[in-house]
Amino acid sequence: MNKEFSYFYGLVLTDGTITTSTRNRGKIQIELSIRDRNILDKLHIIFPESKISIRQRSTNFSQNHESCIFSLFYKKYRDYFFKQGYPKCQKAINARPPNCEYSKCDFWRGVIDGDGSIGQIKNGDPYISLITKSEDLANSYLRLLEEEFGIIKICNKNKRDDCYNITVKNEDAITLGNFLYGDSHLYLDRKYQKYQQNLSWKRTKNKITRKYWSKEDDNFILSNSIDNSMMKLNRSRSSIACRKNRLIKFNK
Image 1 (cartoon, rainbow, N blue to C red):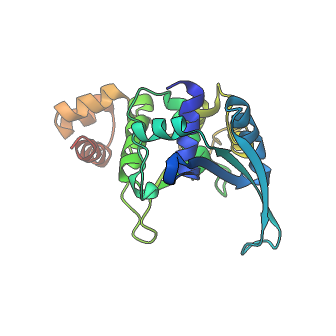
Image 2 (tube, rainbow, N blue to C red):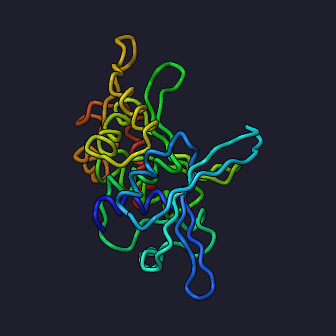
């Protein structure tokens, strides 16, 4: 799966729909606010057989909400999506990455553009978050963070809204943002702009600088006692114990 289709797959998986009907009818469709039309226009260039339309309707937030709709009717694309494991029902719960080889940065950028958030918290610190109901998608994202960046996070489903909310902040958010958006031409403009704003962030001097864990640190912790790890890595007992518990839980 090439870079452009990897992004397309991620965006459809999170913010699109695939419908089927009799006599091989159906479509792949993405409907976004008119402010996000630019990404749909770019997809229309990639898929010239697609159609772009505008819809106006009343919503809870606006009497004249205007949206842009990208529609792709060709059956060969629907068949390819289903071949790669695109869910035929309950997409929000059953979403997962495609079965084939794909471009990780492009696929996950499509996912973040669809179901993610980029910005700054109240104190100005940058963050990138992903919210999903899919356990498969959440676990795949956690593996990406660990394998690509050494970021180990444990995420349990939020009982209030039945979703996984995975957030990275500060230096991790900058690193992840560069991976997703640093060398790309397909993206939601407003999220790319948030990524660009995050790049100007600098840790203030009065904040405690986070001491990052390396893969060598993690391997040493897993193969040695807490006391030995404290001496070798110059960290506190609680820090070593917490990290060891996370590593063991993550690797189960």
